[in-house]
Image 1 (spheres, rainbow, N blue to C red):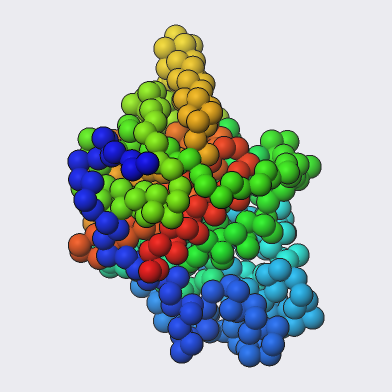
Image 2: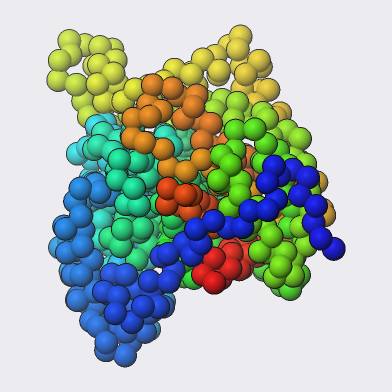
Length: 497
Ligand code: GLN
């Protein structure tokens, strides 16, 4: 049965500008080692085609040659060299010798964990996050800590105390945020893959803007121990990779139950993936505000999936219009509580110009936090205050439950949902800095997924006429990462043809 695309203005479009590029590079025999896929790196390491120290060095050289991208806040070259030197003994581990970058809000023992903030500029992490511990145990070589929006609050990486990041595809444009350094590092071959965090889209949006793959796992699928808290009921560690296979290899290593995170879940048995899938297109995600070129690319992707034998159906998520409001109330409320700990006493920045304890608190927080973080603490404190709690916070929680119910309804008749990741391609640096609402609207298709605790993946599905990457998002049922990754692989294949 042919799908009648009632929700699309232009049904004639095909994926414009495919192939998307990066996934093809790894099959080029002459590509330098830093451009290889993880499978190719692993194979070369096992067969002696390259040594782990050589592979680490080619990445460190690449990072040094590309400082203007500003993808890293701290490069841990010495640690990487030492780890690589010992990795030849562990060559059968799943990520033996593979160079990986870590977003700077995830702890790496002995290295500053700044969260992109002046507040934590000099704070040295005393322990490894569980995800970092698992990467190390799998033989990975950690290259350093990547740039990000301050405390992961932002959609463009322009809220970093350490400067903005250039989109490697389009200098002068943002890489997306908040995991902008991680996405730029992967797209620019400054790491084979990277960890990011996703509270409302911070892995998927930069993946879409930089033309890489970004996986936001189910809430509870990956331990948050060692991830600096922003909004704890939404935060999840995710993976950025150049291909779905690269992304999957890293996810397989970091996923799973951790007694140190009470919200982490034991690995549930994944159900088998049907050969023919029913893929829902939520009509609210293709409405006003969606850039026509993004619409054309994602519509073309839907048609390619249909041509591959899957079934497309029109679905509705009726509470979508309330997503951004609910998300920004809940995330600010949780942030105001989580960030209360930065007071100049226990750790981090302390203002020097103080007379007494209370002015020390005030000055430390005024000087240590940037504008966006302060805006959110104020908003969050407001929505939680007596008198406003019911009107804002309690209402947002009710909306959250309805958004989750919309997804549950949709998943009764579909296996997954296909949407754009972002309403536009990467915008220019500075373009939205004076308009927080315009910035927040970049998260219009991603925040609902966090509110509902579901897994989603952004995969490159084409380019705009100006050559900017476009991402398609596949959203799945809880713990069905394998299913959404298989659809993403299908899109990757269709785009490579
Ligand atoms: N852009 C969203 C925000 O600023 C999402 C951030 C995130 O996922 N960490 O809140």
